[in-house]
Image (tube, rainbow, N blue to C red; front, top):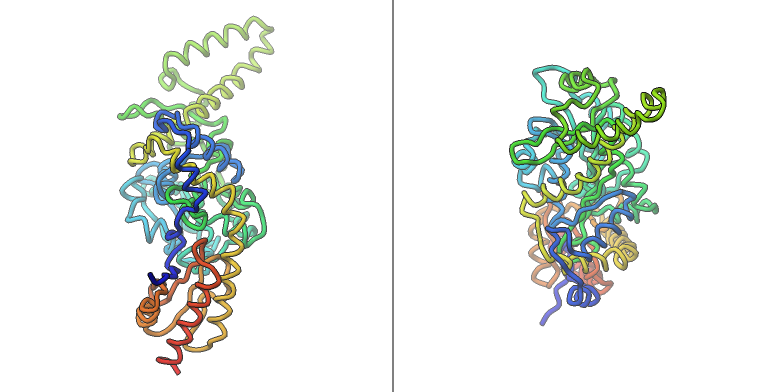
Length: 435
């Protein structure tokens, strides 16, 4: 049987032999009940790798992004993101269907959205306007050529979001490729977002699955209010912005006027707990009690939110059909991905760099776009790209079109022999059709 060299995507990777063995022997439980120890271990290690407090194992990167949209927003609000982002281009309009959001799509240049344009498009306070709640970024940025955003840019975007009391979600499907390019730990990239999604099933070669990780200190702080249960019995938690530089929504100002939790906001059990706590503190001197009670009450409210947060995230995953029961079989492969596959991503980058240099050396009509290769993906332009794709497919080399360009992706199933076959095929095509 003729060998196929498949450069279409890093999603075509097959699980390694070590992954298959780990899946066969995985310790499992019902993850919907929180009983799967392998899933728990995967989530814990994933959170640590990104410097986050919590992580959730989900079936796909798309689901991870969609859950994040739900966590950070309410229906009718706006999200700012690149017009070429995965969330806009490749998630079937999910931000409107699943989260009820309105997208403000901004032009990105090499993955970068102009920060001044982002600030300009943040809505001021007005009863006629939807509230701007979230900025989504993608790093590396797939459709813009696999480019990696610099830490300096991410820091400035984070500062803008903080100034304007916005949340930031990072579609980091290939965040470890970004870390490899920047020669920095993934934590240094992830710290500029409240939530980060990354895929186990791309360059990390697992068969299925992605991770959504979040920072509870950013998502839940002492300003959290506990709302009544909504129509489906689910608690809703919101952090009240404290910065007025970009305008504060009317509903937030009204909540600030209350300046305390009302009786209707808290379930009966919590009311009783607070009463007992206040009574015990009042046995101290009045001065100490007056000082401590409000602060302890706020700390308890924050702790309660922390305890329920993961339950809410799991609930949204369940609502989207992501409850996978004995998913430790899949998580076992994900653990191998984190332990063994991150460290080899440099090999993919090196082959991608060599291929980029090869395309650049051919000259016109071949054109490398972008001119610099950042990750494991190489984009280039050639006239009649479908003709080249068909020519190579006949020779057992698979690549894919990307609008008027071609994308070539390197991954664990590609070796130097595959790269040589690609070189030979393109040279043969060039001699036959372009010279």
